[in-house]
Amino acid sequence: MARIVLGIATSHGPLLSTPPQDWGERVKADRENPALWYRGHPYRYDALAALRAEERLDRRATLEERRARSTRCRKALGGLAETFRQVKPDVVVIVGNDQHEVFDERNMPAFSVFWGDAVENGPPTEAQIAQMPPGTALATYGHRPIVTTRYPCAAGLGRHIIGKMMELEFDVGQSNVLPRDGQEWSRGGLPHAFGFVLRQIMQDLPVPHVPVMINTFYPPNQPTARRCYRFGRALHAAISSWPDDARVAVIASGGLSHFVVDEELDRRFLDLLQQDDGDALGELAESYLQSGTSEMKNWIPVGAAMGLAGLRMELVDYVPCYRSDAGTGNAMGFVRWL
Image 1 (cartoon, rainbow, N blue to C red):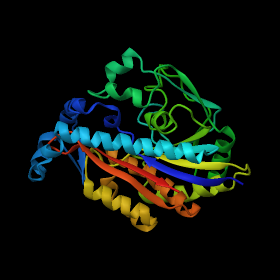
Image 2 (image 1 turned 90 degrees about the vertical axis):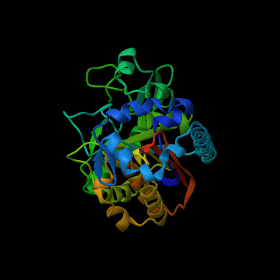
Image 3 (image 1 turned 45 degrees about the vertical axis):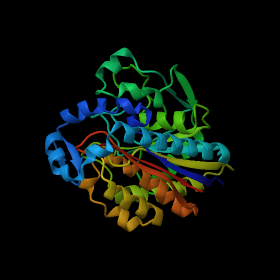
């Protein structure tokens, strides 16, 4: 039977792949964003800057601070990649979200499992780059290779997970073919949540994997934090019942708080994750888990699965990366379970 031997959770935000001196490019998009979510409420940039003025967040967004925090992030990512290399799992399950890269309003499943033989990822087209928000094109190398690359998937495990989830009353979406980049219904190729793991954790030398997608971003069918925790327990059952004698890693991609950094929320979330407190995680206010911060819901199923697998969580690093006096940016988290 399959056995879970490793868990990893990593942020995947563009700042991780952007030179610190260019972090300010993203502030242009922040200023145009009509809904910067912070502690349950959407704000415009100027209102948010006024609300957080006493925190003097400009001091945390200086170039010196950006460089120091970027260095810490790269060190933590390198540590996770080295752990992955040392453990050498036979197969990987990646839990991430899609941001209109594959799915859109025509079809937006709450949970979906891919069970094809492979996925492809490649550099963005000039047309795609032109449509990207300011600053994001600089970071595409972090999740998209410079030439189109085919990455193997674990079709057998993916099919098994789908069947077991249906038994456990999770009516998951499924697909075994993703649209090719550039087709009318594909806005960005392989979702960056998955491309980031393939490039940064597996370093473009991936073992077969299963992409599991959660709709964290888009109403009205976002699964709650409680539902995500239960999904993780079901995912553990599905993986553990796979008859192949395989060592499995489960990786969460996304988070933590963004596009507005909230260190208090992040710390509480990490504490609850370490305690494997499913009840308290399930009580996290949905109004706090919106926009980018919703990607914490990718971590919750992995934490739940790790608790059942008997693996212990280690916080490799937590690095709040600010890019403005309004507190916009991305809090980066790096965790492993061994």
